[in-house]
Length: 64
Image 1: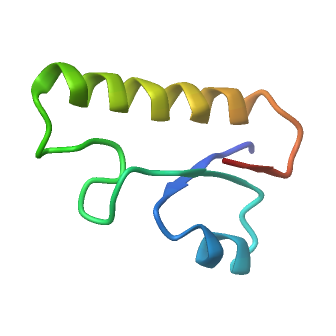
Image 2: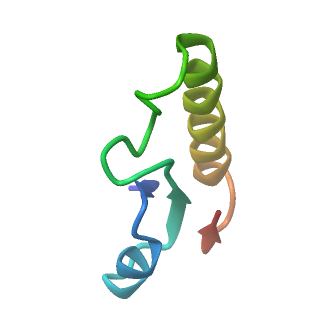
Image 3: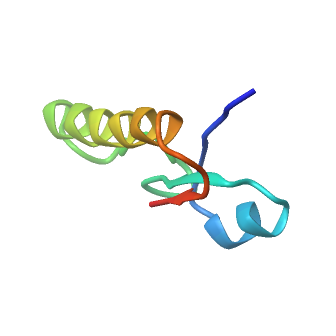
């Protein structure tokens, strides 16, 4: 099974053996930004999801 780990703690994800890692936005909201206006948060979310989809179709290891 191919998975992508979206996290803000990439070094820990690497230590436990994940090989497709996308760095999220922040500790509290890794796939968003609650303090931003809705349009900007949507843009941030879309960017992170697009990176994760790219990682799914890329050979491992994949770190962004």
